[in-house]
Image 1 (cartoon, rainbow, N blue to C red):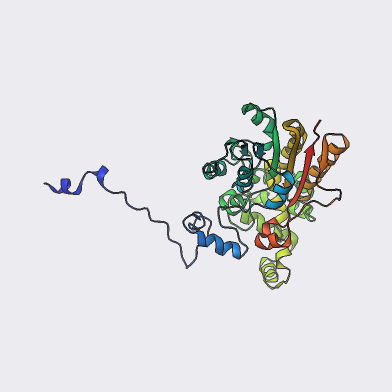
Image 2: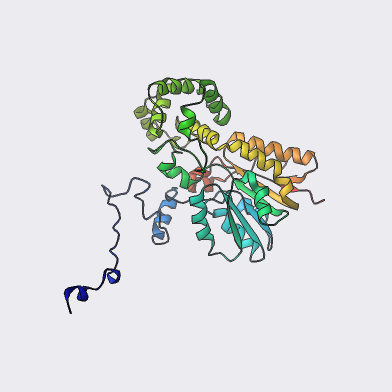
Length: 369
């Protein structure tokens, strides 16, 4: 037997184990390096450790107001539920557990990578589910594809997921260095960088005020115009530095104040509102929400329920107005409560998941006849 026969053919050789990329120091720093957080099934202790510290594991998302959503929307065995923003599937799993094998979950999301990952995750559940890469503004078309005349529950958790925020390649967070993209759907043509480098000063200023209530909207818009005349703004760090300068804040001083302040958690990052406004603008989030609110009554069965979690005042105003007008016009028979205040997380949930702090939940019931 010759040497090659002893070693076997290349096809018979065992595949070499792929070594993970090493990182400097004792702990991973970047999103990509946190390999244990991306594989929680193999490292469950990591999840427990991070949740105990009030942190979200990289690549995951903690659903908010679960108990309140289930209590108010009351999913029942055999019902059809449309989760308009399925994301990581946190709410969807709870819906599936309650509608059983006789029901159906229709999951929508514009983020294809997260949709496919969640499809795999939810395939282990017993109840049937279908998945559509679609914005929730197209809910009517999705129901038509499913050969359905309506559904029993419409649910939407608005805003951006932790998976998207924490991934620096998405450019949605002022905390991480990355390209100014901000698209939830990569089929969209314009990124945040495109808008920053093309919109007029007036349009930028108006967007920062109307979409995020940024009090220094005019200063920031003027600084953007001045900067892009010298060099295009393409990175998150560029925009963050520009905003600090426009507001006359020294970053080192601000970080020190945040470390020493007793109310550090409530100290809003100077760039937070601008980033929020840009993300909403890139994805036309308010336009899509308006369309969902318009078509929702036509997509629900009589007695059907709709529930929406929003995370900023502009979204909440649209939801509150639509539901209240629906009651006045005889479309909805009931809404969340008689008071103006929406349902919000309790302190226990906020402590465990600080990103839930700004969540507001409102619901309505379609008139039975």
